[in-house]
Image 1 (tube, helix red, strand yellow):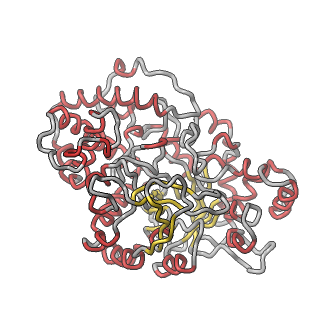
Image 2 (cartoon, rainbow, N blue to C red):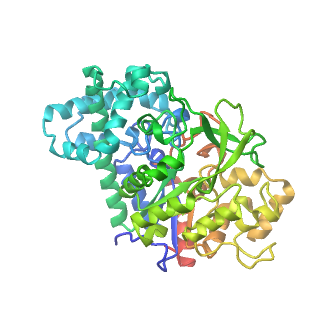
Image 3 (tube, rainbow, N blue to C red):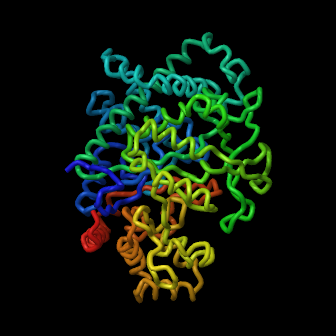
Length: 517
């Protein structure tokens, strides 16, 4: 049965959050080979119909998929050597010296050193085949972003990875690209090859997921990385000075998560210029994303109503101020482009400091918001601030806080796992949580919380793979505001899945009981 994704149908959906980089894999990280297809089989067997992922883009600063070299490109690390071998682009000799990496941690430095070495071998075998028709068609179709991205990466390699603001002025400001050395253009073709292979493999994977009733929810960070082909190739669309340096950058103000706020450092959009060309860059970006996923979670949705502007060079996010954004006009333009079913294609990440204006923008376009169990009153916030994240009437005056047009989670990729979250609470709060869930042992916590949100009115409910498997904080995906070596590095193993099969049996039973699927 093919996945037919609509937030307006009557199906109460259930799904799993895991990024493909965390799939089991033989070559340092998850990829799009046979192990990825087994994840789809597992979801299907467990009556799940959603797979939520993080941005598929190449990772940049801090190995974060939210700090990428391109908002359009796919990560070369996800390219399966197994599938390249089946195409005749790799031999056993090409792979024989591949090192043994840690089974549950991604070594991004090691991936860069060894995976690119092997991908170069695949590229040379590809050149020997001299069968370029499909490759050329791909390059032609995607030239609006691919040419700039490939050239950007080739120049970056020639500068030993230096950020583009450190390049010579003619190249930095794109004034003399015609006279680049031939080897730069040859290297750019290698990066085009990588994107073609990624596209081929991802398209096949998505087709398999959809044909097995699994829809894929993607992720669109609202801002892009400064050191990206997006900014380098579209400098007029950002607040940059004459030398290409940012004038102001993005972040969020201080809150109960951080006394100094979060200084993200992303350049801010020049919305006036974007509006002048009918938000063309954004329309192309959304079109491209919807070729790779079935629905998009827009990260930091509140930034479309107003964003926190910080002067470039500030050490923290404290000295910033709110600037209005043209959110209503922006989404109205997208609605004209994508039709009334835009509301079926977008999830609003409406977490953090959310105002009535942000809620009004979300509701005007009928976008579903997010409900996070960990943000309920047992967390650091107050009942007034966080009561909306409690699934039902216990401890609350309102009968139901999770409206039907919402997506419910135990926690996001930025939260601690349920195990760590629970044991970070005071003993009195731990007792209160267990009483609320009507359980007597912390070992039952994860499935009790999953059951609680499954029983809610939320149309879709999604749980991290780590929480389903009842893992500890060591398997956490990310800790916001840090650049720790463990961020973005968790890996799932087939051994762990085999050891914890009963967790997916429980998940299936709960899914059936709550009439989800």
